[in-house]
Length: 439
Ligand SMILES: Cc1ncc(COP(=O)(O)O)c(C=O)c1O
Image 1: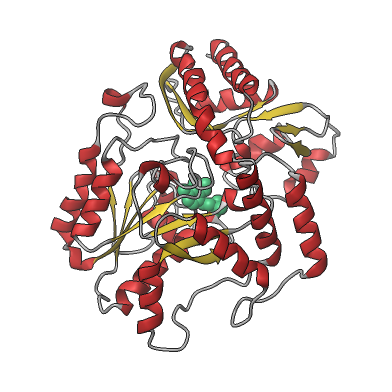
Image 2: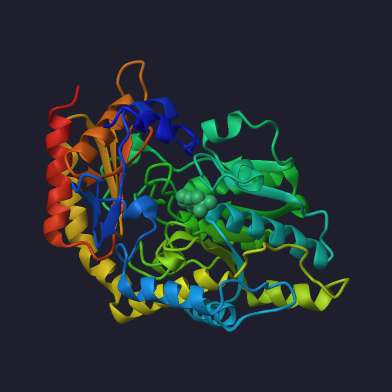
């Protein structure tokens, strides 16, 4: 490493990063293709996490690269406030066709965080438009990750993401998380125990009254908190309670959307219909930032019908429906369809499940869980140093040519949907070897 490099790295205040440690010991990525990253020195790193759960079709796919480049030359930017450009409408229509049930309208944002804030605002504006303006409470869940906007951290449930930022939104409450190692450790697919945790919503209704609650938001499968798979029957129960109490149900599918569980959306996989779905990441295969909200016909129609001014929703972003993002999104959807990548993920998931569960007897492992092409490998924490063991595993994996993601003491895996069986074997063997050698 040239002596000048630490200074060269200093200006970028890196997100969710131990900046001092990184800059003392940088790990850089220079190039990517398919399932592989390459460091500036040309060392290959197998991508076990689809970047950050987002490069579902693999890296630098030619049709997406070409679509972005053509679009940049043809129409770099066009406002979507009272104007429009064809690809934004085309992508919305394609997504509406892919989204489940009557989720047939799409609002565009630029990230998962913005998608979540948009969905929460739509929920509040919808309740007001239908004459239920007192329904203002939002219900999230412990250990949830809904991005980093004030809306998202308010309904989110990851302590460090909340504790430094004051009181956040008022009128928010939380369901209990569903992670229960005592009853569910080493579950294959959905765990058996915990559907009754959805009944906590009944208690919140008892506490606040349903007339004050606008919406419940959950990740149908929590990704960022370490792959927390919903217990059998849990989401169905939540849906039934939301129906019973006239509360909107929002699924945050920023990770689970676009094939991660072997279906277009987790809502399809679980057969449970939310009123809104937030998405981002895989929608463009991460080549250009894009997020959005799939909204039910009932919500959209009522908002337009009852609007008290010609503009029915006072919300939007300069880059809502950015031409480059829309071009990338259309090309990504073509790849998903033409290569049947969601079907491929479904077909591979049994092999994946067997492979990751073979780590059950690896050193330090206290749980292995999986769904679709995701897995969480939970490690026993080091005495007095929560998270340290998994962080060391992350660094060792990278140095051995494998990118994993860690959160707390959990290794989270989510390879691109194009991953080959031999690559799955390599992921598992690398992790086993590293855990064996780790304190
Ligand atoms: C479920 C969920 N919601 C929201 C977000 C935030 O997305 P972004 O980082 O694009 O703002 C994430 C990111 O991982 C996520 O997993």
